[in-house]
Length: 201
Image (cartoon, rainbow, N blue to C red; front, side):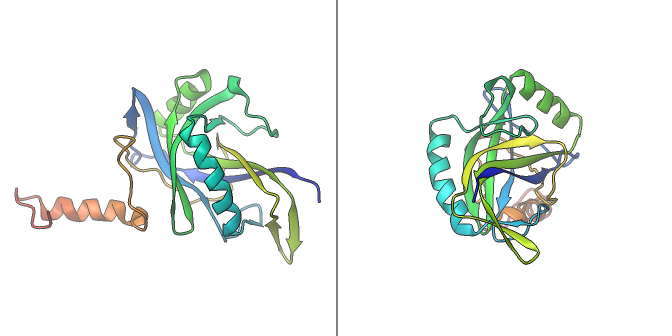
């Protein structure tokens, strides 16, 4: 089988509920990068073991501070530095989700991305990789030769449901298993602590 560029997209919401943190003055956002073992908008299914393997390799790229991505999705296996808009600072597993913390860079493309977010424009994040696929019934299974390249920000995501949330610093992280409950927990705490004492702390 011949390898091809595989592009997958997740939605990042930039509604009024979106807040942005700062890292050295740069915007810092967080959300779901990918979901495994689930058919996406391109009818593709990625077995979890592929992403586990690729995220172990990608962790070294993050550690080296070179987990760069572009604004818009090129049909290329090369990350074009002239179009770089962001850098992934951290990534971790939460069930079948890979969660990422992303720094928007003050590059020409990063400034465009920041302006879109600041003005409430909904943007998506999309994985880019190389690999072959195999048709199984109505779905397409990504094969073991898959290689993750990066994540890019895009305008037209194929998969809805990855909503951004407030990040105040790089060190503030959502504990595994609690990502989807974070907003609810903060509302409950605000109600219980509204009279000046906080019985849950």
